[in-house]
Image (tube, rainbow over the protein chains, first blue to last red):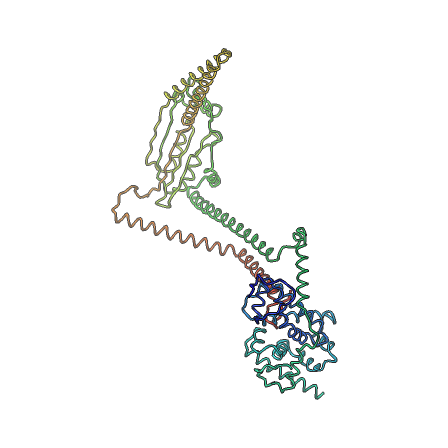
Length: 196
Length: 408
């Protein structure tokens, strides 16, 4: 028997579900009072969101800040779940919220760590020394804001290019052109670093 | 193993070390987290805190910015409209007064005298007698003179012939004059408010050849002939009628009935006084009779007062027409009548349209400062709304990633 949203038990623990449900269905159930649905949704996306937040904020050294950003993401989801209109997928909606939360956390961390006018590059430089991809991360941080987000989203393992374009709110062609420019700049920066 | 998007247009496929490293940039290698649980707990605590917030604390919170801005705009709008409407009315009143003054000035200059007429014209319409006889005891004496006016009108030394009679005098005077408006204004100067005279009604309609003015005067009887003579000088007399309604008999009759009723009233009062031990029914009957008598006395007194007012103030109707006025009440064929009606309707319609356009122009041009202020307020309000909407949590969180946030 399939329980309706009102009949579902209200519990903090995610309930195992034999029937795979969509993100939209999980969000609808959460809005109806099923807190476990949020857990299921989080199981699907939380690790990817943490990874993206780490990429945006500056590396594994900033993982705590990234975790705060993702927690803030879930808090915003809880607060504004009733405002979700279904104009986009829940996944892209989650990523939008997560990106904005990560950017806020990054700016907040920059203000706390350094002078008020600290740049993004300073944060990443302070953040990561033992990171294997540290030089690449530094090069990514030197990109413009638009290009950096395009690179991070396009090479994020759970997003396709159309989904990345939807998250950024830009056409797919714009995304590809930005990605092309970003990779060109990235290769040039890496080559420059190798030569130096 | 990371999965690189297969539709990567840059050729950075899985064999590309750069692509693999870029995937690594957004990969979390840390322990598993359950951040959503913390978020739920935080949200629950916030809700509990919000519910426990006292009513007083909620009231102390400032009103939402949107509400305050809306209230401010509403108040300013109402003020602006009020000021604008009042200013337009004042302007219209001044314009009308100025046009009347202008016309009057021209007319008076053509007449060549009465330098202070303009100011008096404005007062003429509102003139009322300083005192209208409220209780005419004129007939308390054998001679039917307006005794309530005694102190004032009695000094006028009414003609002996009229003193013996009570006559309601009426007269109609029709004048032809080249300038109706000037004559209209000057005619109103004839009355003497200090003697209780007043203008009962006046009207001035039409322009130029179609102008016609009517004034109904109430002159003191003793001064009626003098006033008529003054009015005759304002133009050429085309018609003059006078009539007198002798109400002496009515006055005498009223006076007699009144005296009789009062005498009976005294008798009933004396009877009541002398029969205090009479049966209650008789006393009540006497009281009813007394009430009836007093009602009759009041009615008779009112009629007598009314007659006294009519006798003491003669009524003069003055009609002023232009010299070349078209004959009135001329029967016209149906075609001419229709054409005339059509012309009148067309003239009226165009006049209304012109008035409406003029009013709109005044509203637009005269209210420019108000419009400008309102526009600024609306723009600022819209900007505040947009900024508030852009900075609202829902909008900010759901904004496409990479969109710069607006400064708070």
